Image 1 (cartoon, rainbow, N blue to C red):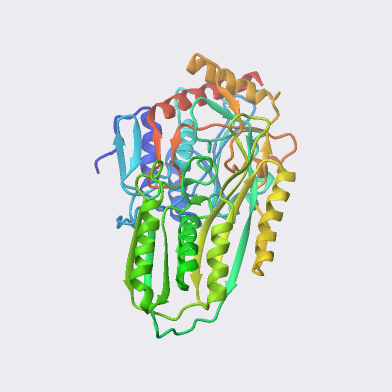
Image 2 (image 1 turned 60 degrees about the horizontal axis):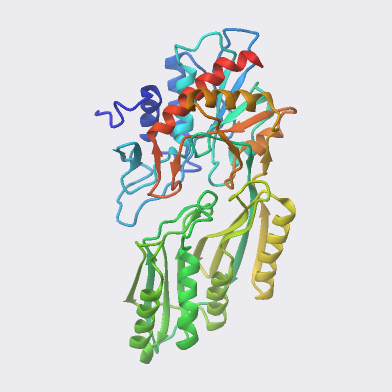
Length: 480
């Protein structure tokens, strides 16, 4: 087999990443990867154990009892997204890797550098022969980080030994993350009784070609949410030509900004041509200054039973009113979002519409206010509204010894001080920090752009920098 990433440095890291990329590992389907990890550990003389939910711990034993143990942490799963024209099967096919200059990306699918490259970095360090006089090095790989934190929520504190941990799930080279967001979800449910409408014609509107992206990392960028955009168009149409929804479908992940959405609905037969004309006008009037790939396609489809007008109005008005993007900004870090909302999934199943919103925050008081707003929106429209908590937010100790040696190691590689800041994305650090008293944690990563989307790529140079930095930390652990 031709090695697609052959020649990239550091070669040990890219070799492992390519092997990981051949194994299906969408969220909640990481079993094949766990089997491969066990075989890899046996081949390389690395300790292996797995807990009941699938979390894996790989261990390189200490060569010096005086050096503290170091835990490197990443997650096994990836967000599986692809373009509409892709015929890729995430259950069977390897990720179609592509090298373009200093970037590695995938052809028409998400890459999975989030967090496959973190796993590869940790594993390469476990077998690095240049590393001597090291303490115990552990690599913890959790499951289902992207779709529910199932792995880390079921993790036990005695599964690993270290109290010093580097999370490898951040996405900017030369940056040390010391603060991440937590959050929770809101789900709206609208049941209805489908009815036949013989005097009506069915239309389909598709909104597609949007950039999408990570609902934490990219939420502040000038991008559309396909669900909200489509709902706004349907509300305008409904004001002129009453519609009856057959189906509304958009988004695939709560933590991914929806790139595509479609709706099928009935309109009065005598108003079909005018309705199509209005939708075309609406689509052409949407600004494409930041979303150049936006497309709006209108077509006729076979009529089907549809929701009554009351439930139709509830649905389209709710989705159009749900706030999207930043609610507030961090007072601690310039340009960092504090609280945000992403209407990630809209679906029609059976005889009900379901709308799911994922909210992130680094401030509990502001999060409470945000959830109140979302709850009152549903209650005010007499829509069933349920809310749940999410991942825990996290703040590192700014005076921690681990943070100092990470900064020193970065400075030695970059020849300048790294940036120390927070991230609006959710990391597993908060949950892990609560498992052992005195856990000392920071987060780092190479530069990854547009994660959770087919536009995702990782910069090769950033991986090289991070590799040298991690080796420097392993060497400096003797100073702790």
